[in-house]
Length: 123
Length: 323
Image 1 (tube, rainbow over the protein chains, first blue to last red):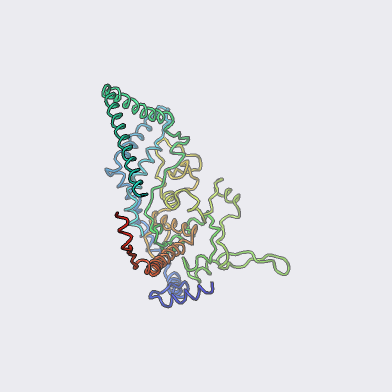
Image 2 (tube, rainbow over the protein chains, first blue to last red):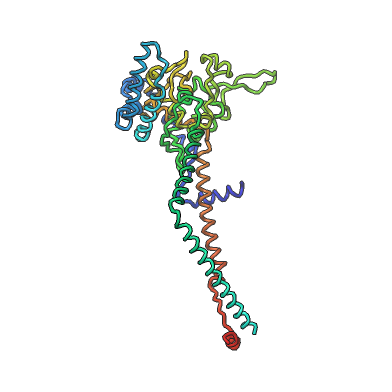
């Protein structure tokens, strides 16, 4: 290890880019955040209670759009048909069928369609 | 003399070869004469044998081809969609801002039930927290000391070398507190589940508002399509705005799920960043060595490649050969 340490030291000294240090640079922003968190919580709580209502889950929104898109039309058609059939059948007390499989196809189609869009929205 | 006899012998051989070819020509012509009689017969044999071959393959697959599924799709669980995780690309690292948010989600949400027993505070330093933050966090919890002079074990505040404490004393306590269901330890959960990050993310965000019509959900269970069997004891926990991020990222449910999943991936393979850097190092060194070897080869072969071999026959000898 000793030899490699000296070699990496030399390489680091010669290299035009710098390496990231874990301790020193991180301490500065840490002080700021600790001060902020001490001062602001009371103000922020009041503000962010309002914000909470505004947050919308992009996943649900995108998947809802995808479910209604042309791409998932067959899966949605089957699922809706199944739901109708099962809800009617349960009245006759024969309801052994479930729509899990149809739901799977629809959910798979919707999440696959929404995945790239979702990742472009999320941080 | 020798040369002449040699020539003669080749002539004889040629004669023999001509005779042989003549014979084969004859035989071919006689055969073709015979086959012209029934072209239909040949065609029928070819067609029938081909049909038999195709038919037998089809019959085999009809008999044995389709695999038998013992489980219903509901028992298998819905296979998670592959999400385009950035940190899973070959030359990408974890996004450490995401890890920081994910750790916050773990601490504020998951840690109520799930332990993270293989992660000590020291690994958080430099990747997620600074030294002082990690120390502060460690000191929030108490750990047993070594026995003192009187043989008694006291409590001391945590150090960086301590492991993140579990919410329950043991598995039995965890089961008792959770209706008999054991919340798994999350240290290696990403490696330990089929589908990895995609599965965790899908599971966390995949709770439908209500189970599909006709689905059976057991008592105390929740419907989640991604969980094998679809009945999961964990209820949906991530709701929009549950956590307040310090970097003011909007804390939607999917954002929190994405952050915590990436954090759990870090917990399962904290060496990933270094591993990828090592891979690049190996490729770089190999490229340098390859270039070196090409140069050395050229150097070593220079004398061989630049030499010229000339055959200069003695003039007297060539006359003898021609005669």
